[in-house]
Length: 273
Image (cartoon, rainbow, N blue to C red; front, side, top):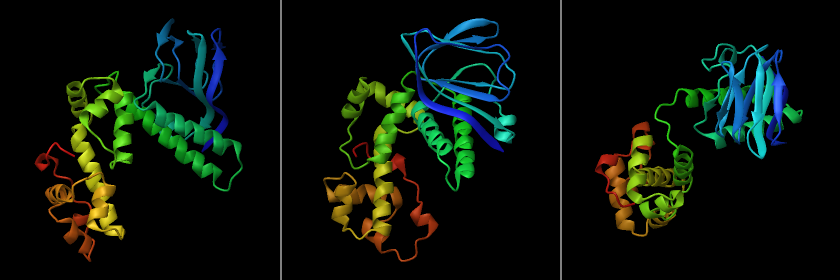
């Protein structure tokens, strides 16, 4: 059972903001900062950067304050006896960095909507959203190899996978992050285990398979929709990735799982998207 007492996203306060509850709440409190803040941790006041999350259990001392001209956070005060909360591996009263703050912020916005409107599936929707939020918190807490560019890399990868047909080049991607092309390729591969160009190709092939299986476009139309200016180049990369030519793939009458979900064989693909 989950019950939200109050949830707020983008709560904004002046630079003199202080939240001090010595005896804590009688329920859970989760706070995610969007600006720097100071938290009382292990007997002393410590400064933490933006995009930090902190979970307080019932009756735990709560103290945090602004340390800039403005303080902004997302927060939720709630009860829960669900194991994903009551038996969580997250620390209590100790902030940790978020891997994907934008994703978590969107979950908070959805929680606010569900909490404020009396809809038919309000309870189950809140349960799902809260569970997903705690999954993202666990991913962040146990994430290894966190880098200062991680947020920007996540946004770049999401853009690639959402719009694989765009004109992606290494210099263009590097410029969007204001880093050198060589450094981008190094940190992207280290972070995701795949190069940025390989990610572009993989995303394009995945989109092409969807069009070929479920659309009515010609091979040429699919190629252009997936970002290829040269149909022959598209056909060559598609066959390298799937083992099928686009036409044979399109005409396959029995959509076998091994065909539909054939993994992109990145090692055989050229670095040109």
